[in-house]
Length: 243
Ligand SMILES: [Zn+2]
Ligand SMILES: [Zn+2]
Image (cartoon, rainbow, N blue to C red):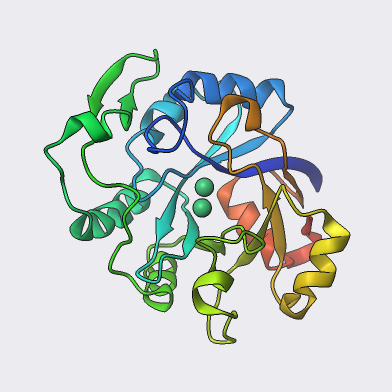
């Protein structure tokens, strides 16, 4: 039976260089529950190493493994997956292009944490770097791995597909576009109405604990799962996305 589920599908952890250290797996999950979310996606920049700990904590909330991938054009795109195996495969591809640095003084805040908030290790890759994947190839790889892909924060003035490419070409088969919390719905409809061939979502892009759930998307679907989200984005059998 169809029900309504609130999803925040773009949340960083303390592994992202720009996120606060309090964004530990346990804190992310407990805050998401406090904010009444049913589903969260964990989407660190070009990495997925904190997701196993978020999955261990989970406490009844649905956790979707994901990544905010930086393409060669420096556009941010979300990749969401049904399981860890596929997101780790994308991480392997992304890591091929992202240099290691021996200088932990600069990158020490990229923290891999266990489910008890204990530090496991520091990631010393330059996670904010662009990967070598062009947008079109990245979308193809994510789809081949069984994932869905969403163009991030198309209303932002940096690192969006629009700022980097100028427009969204018909050949780019994103599963959805994301409008950030900054742009109110009616304004977004006016600004980006030409892209209404895609479903739209909004999410928090949380880098701080207090950001979690500041924007969320309602999905009308059978259960809170990756598979149902994919069906809702394509409008199958009464399922819907309420932006
Ligand atoms: Zn971004
Ligand atoms: Zn982000």
